[in-house]
Length: 551
Figure 1 (cartoon, rainbow, N blue to C red):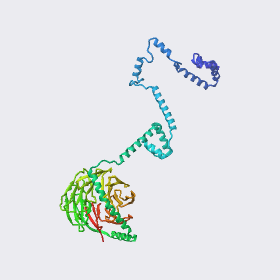
Figure 2 (cartoon, rainbow, N blue to C red):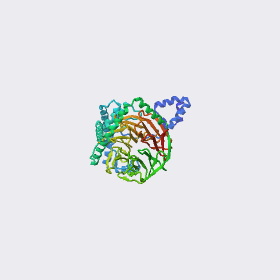
Figure 3 (cartoon, rainbow, N blue to C red):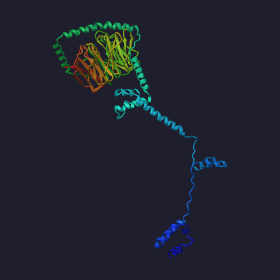
Figure 4 (spheres, helix red, strand yellow):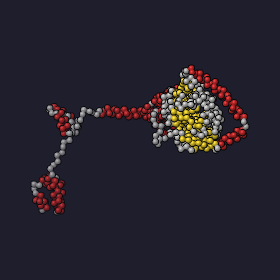
C-alpha cells in the first residue's frame, strides 16, 4: 500500500514525521505516488534536521539605567568603574594620552560667532558706498596698502574688493590714511620750503660788491644787443651763413698725447695762447697754442684732477707771479697756481669730499667750487675766506658756471636738477627740472638769457631765463653728455662733448647740427672754445687732447 510503504521507508520514530504538521503530511502522502520526487524531499528534510538551532540574543529596548542601578545596589562596579576603565585601557579600547579635552560647546559657540561676524561683515559691505571712478578706487586701495589691481581683475571686481576690505578695516581707516597723507605732504612742503639763516658780514659786503659790479656790465650787454638788432636782417643772415660755412670746414689741426692717464679737463687762457689740461695722474700741464708744446707741468695733486681754469685776467693784465690758475681734485683739495712756479701758490682748505669743478667769477675776485657733499661754495680770494656755503641739491653738485654779468651762478647736480642762483640776494631764481639723469655740464650764453645743460640722459637742454622754462631739448649724443659750451663772444653756436667719443657743434638759434668732431678713440671728457673763436679743444679718455680749426 502506498501509505504503509511510506511509513516503513521513513521509520516510525523519524523526527521529521513528528515535526511535520498535518498539512505537510498530506503533501507527502500525495507526492508519494510520484516516486523519485518523494525521495528528494525526504533527503532535504533530513539535512535540515541535523543543523543546531541558532540562539537569538536578547534585545533590550529602552535604557539600561534600571539594570545599572540594580548592579550598583548589589555592590558591583558599573560600566564606568575603575576596574572597567583599566581593563579597557589595557585592552586598547580606550586611549588616553593626556588630560586635554575638546569642549564641543565652546567650539560650536566659536563657529557660531564666526558665522555671525561674517553676516555682519556682509551687512556692513552692502551699506558701504564705493566710488564708481576706477582711478579713485585704485587711489583708495593704494592708500590702504593693498595692490591696486590683480591679474584678470576688472573695475567691477576691484570695486567689490575695496568694499570687502573696507567692511573689515572700516571706513575710518581710509580717512586716517588720508589724514596721514595730508600730514606727510605738509611735512614735505615744509621741508622743501626755502629757509634762510644769517650770514657773515663779509657775505653782505660781497653781495653789494657783486651788485655794483654786475649792473654796469648788464647795461653794456643790453646796449650791445640793441646795436646788434639795428643791423639789417639780411646782413645778420649772411654773417651767420659765413660762420656756419667756416664751422662746417673744421678739421683736426693738432693732436697731442697729454699724459699716461685720461685727461679730464682743458681750458684756454684769455689770450688764446695757452691751453691748460688736467689729468687723472694728478698732474696739470700748460701747453702753447697752436704748436702744442709743453710749457709747464704743475705738480701738487696726489689724485685725479677734476678741473683747472685760468683767471679771467691771466695772460692779459695779471702778473705772472699772481694767482693765474685754480684746480681741484677728487680728494677735496683746491690749489691756486702762478705762471712762474710749478708748485701751488696756495691751498684752499675746507672741503671734505670730492670737488668736481672749480670756476672763476668774471671779476676774478671770487672762486666757485662744487662738491659731492651736496653743496657749492664761494670763496673771496681778496678776503681769503669762504663767504658762501650754499646747499640746495639732494645729491652731489657737479658743475658750476657764472653769468657773464657776474650776477648769477648756475649749478648742475647729480640729482638731475639744475639751479640758478642770484648772487646779489642769495635766492634760487630758477629751478631747472626736466633731465632724467645727472647734469654734468652747465653754461651761460653771452646773450645773457640762455642756459645750456648736458646730462647723463644723452641730451642737451636749452633754458630761457626770461620764460623760466626749457625751450628746446637737443638729442645730442648716443652716450652721456660731459660738457656744453657756448661760443664765448656772441653765443652763435653751441659745442657739446660726450662719452660717444665725439663732440658736436649746434647752431644758435635753431639748434640744428653743424659739425661732428670725430677722431678720439675714447670718451670726450672736456672741451673749450678760445676767446678769439679760432680754436676748439677737446680732451679725452684716450689720454690725448685735440685742437680743431677751420680751414
